[in-house]
Length: 237
Image: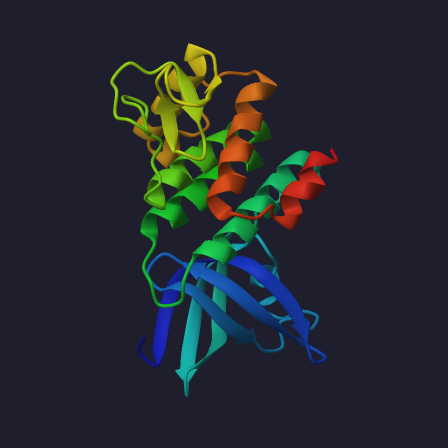
């Protein structure tokens, strides 16, 4: 990274530091995860105040000194204000941030995941159903991680006659292999997600049953091999 650079980032985490500063964990599509000190951002009237909260998508100017990053300026592009008013959307968005913080690596470009995150937050900020957006996020995420669900052939034996799903195996399975039956519309829904660009998340039509949403959550926890803290909170609502 050059000494001075401007990048569009989403704030994944913000921790108070000293009296007036914050330590920010940022997600940049060009540079992946960045930990940066935002000096004086908690002062009343600071030009950095609006850009130093979680969820904020902003154009950050940064200075790198001895491998440490310092934010020098920021222009907020979207704070996703309306998302914060809906507890389900807020918790779902928090889950997205937590997942991205776990997955995104420093100094590694991840433009697809960045676009997915921003578009999903934008959709919920404009009233899209949180269950639909979460389901979309999960299956697109699996594709980005190289875990694209296999829908056309058995994930265990390779047979082309599939009728069940096995999350641990990574997709559909045939009648002779272990798995659970799911409605055909669920399979079509997953396929539709995989073929739809993230910017169209609000327009996509998906199964409305809670079982489809639950399937997405189970697939997510299987891929991450943990249950995110924000997901446990979301289940309480």
